[in-house]
Image 1 (tube, rainbow, N blue to C red):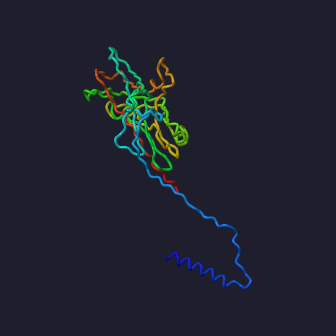
Image 2 (tube, rainbow, N blue to C red):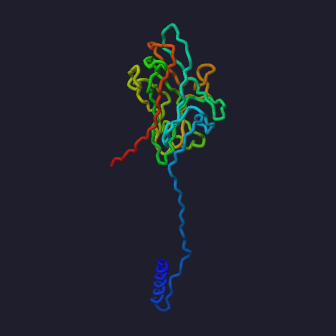
Image 3 (tube, rainbow, N blue to C red):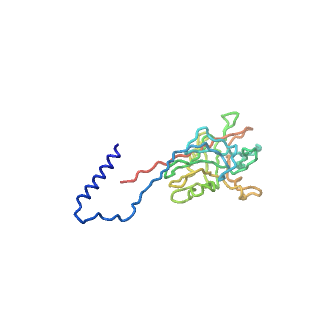
Length: 279
């Protein structure tokens, strides 16, 4: 009924105007058809799909290890390969010991063997304009004997070299530019107790080292920081660069026992808070 009333009012106004026109006068001609503007809309909501693990920078295959956290979020660390420094004999003389981490070996979901560089995988799939975050590493537990918590490889350090940020081919447009104004990546760094201060404590957790920092519109998607490259030859004959990119250094003063020693390296991703412009 309301629509009809409005239409009637419009018709009445038109008739009234016509009555008021002077004799012999006519209404102004219409210039042409009047355009009509339509609209289109689409809505997106934040997704949070369960993460999968693939070799660094590859779409597939999905590999069975390393595992992923039970809880997941749009901004998260997905996985980190365990570092395997192999098995060694205790020698009858004292010296500094340096061992390289082996390439990571696992299987895909079809049980086929897969070998990759050591890597950490993370993602930022937040529906925001700018993807501002840091990725940090920390030696949160020194190399400790699995049979006796009192046995520690005191002052042992981990060094990482040839770090490279990679993503899949389909996400290449979102790869941050390293060493630009927005993105920095430490290609080499050391994890040790109090590493950043230069003092080494035996059992204490080390300082956190910021490995990657990026801001701006790039940085969306799934990324890997890999250490070395499988396809690049290493310095030693028959070795790949990736087999020489993660090292364990044990000082000569460390007491060695016939045990398996394990350490914990904690990787963290954190949002960089937005800055308020100065007035």
